[in-house]
Length: 361
Image (cartoon, rainbow, N blue to C red; front, side, top):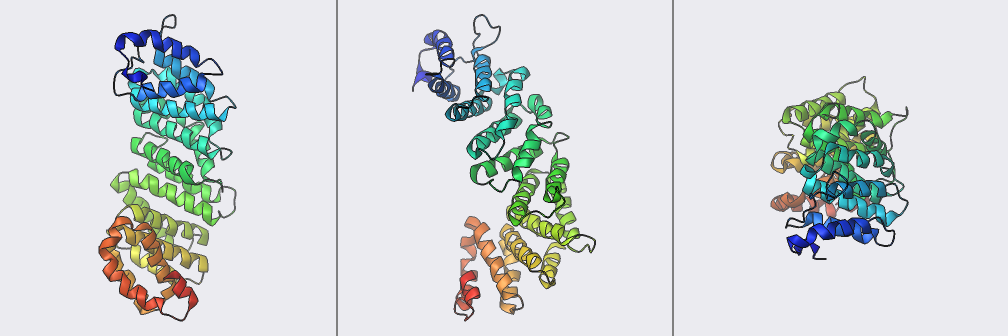
């Protein structure tokens, strides 16, 4: 489609026709995709031009129709409508009034479920774009329904892939905006509460998702808030009053935050994590191994020499090799610079008799 390249004088007559095609069941999906292309066009497609008899613009009428499509059971139509809304909000938020978002926000909560993760991913993308482009008009209205549904989605054992990433991106956008009651402190408190919301310990999958959500929020938070959060988790590790479940969550959260941020300035972090290896609980030691590897990925030059020294010491060699494995998974492109340091140790342990050790290597 090259409608965005038409001469300007042809557009005023064309846009109302396209709008009518959105109201026809046979042509509405094609019309929705066409408006999405027009919204993304680099030339002015005159979408903000007045629409006769409505008192609003063509773009406002299109958004109203797209909001109605979110209620339909037609899956391809909902997907096309969400994609178009994301493009319109991203490119033309300034041409919309606060009232134009109300219909969209009203229809979005039911879409945030694990019944259709692709639709949930698209809906969360729209929610993120609303926060980034029209925060003042939309963020106060996200708190009653959309944020609770997003947090509930985090507890689903089915959540994965693009939907999972979109949930993290949405929460990070809220933290970056920083408006109460959806600021960093409030959101992280609510996320951590999900770990035992029903009175029972969460599964390892759930803990992993929640810790990644905490890390996404912490990465977007201001440095002092992130530092105080890390210090609070470190303090939990040495608090005898904390349950083992919460200390496991603290370790995993430290690992996820450390993989995205340099935590070498926190002097008490490394001793607290290393002390966890001496606790007589396998789940706790496994979480410590996970945390150590991910934290090390955030500053290889600071943590890698210590990790290699612990591997060679042999006290917790399997767990330390597992930490190296986690480092390799999350270290990214920066690993290339430390490969010469890693290979001699890995080759040494690759020749060990213990099958478990060789498998980790």
